[in-house]
Image 1 (cartoon, rainbow, N blue to C red):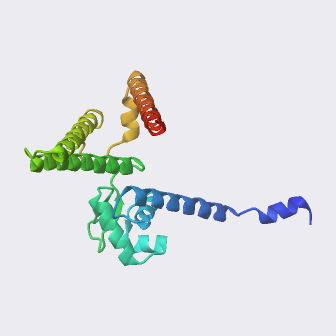
Image 2: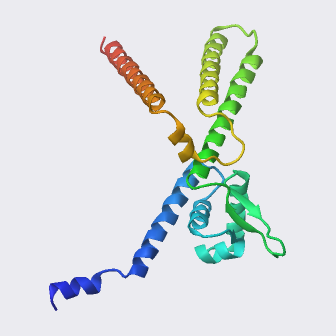
Image 3: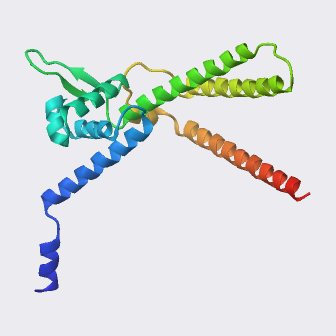
Length: 221
């Protein structure tokens, strides 16, 4: 058998290539979403990828067949995705079953949902640190003073994070076309933000190095 003929026989078919590419996308998005959104499993991410690849909304039954998973597992993840604002439920006039589709473009809808979740986390922790400070009140003693200092620093940081998010990522109702939004941002603004981020990272690394050197010098004494 010639080498050329052997390579031809071993080469995957078009159908196999399509199947491999589809599988890779389903697995990749599944892992990404499961790692980013508590309560949503790898199957939830695969549902998102399946809806992205579909030409139109899909029913729970269709998604169950598409992904080879039980209706109960698909339904549980659909509820989680709907609660996260990633998908929406639809009912066409005269239809007997609901269908589900992405609330916006992919991956914009994922990034938007993640930013929304991050915003809620910052606000929750901001409220928590302030509540802890209030509970500490006027307590005295070295332990109370140390705790007060740490809580005050934590509150300051969460206030800073909240202000930064409010300036850079204003809250928006509904899905956002991130590509159009970023395209509209002037290049000098993006360059200034990149420069500031790099400067902050370099300063942080310098502080970390100085702290390690100081600790080492103290241990060697």
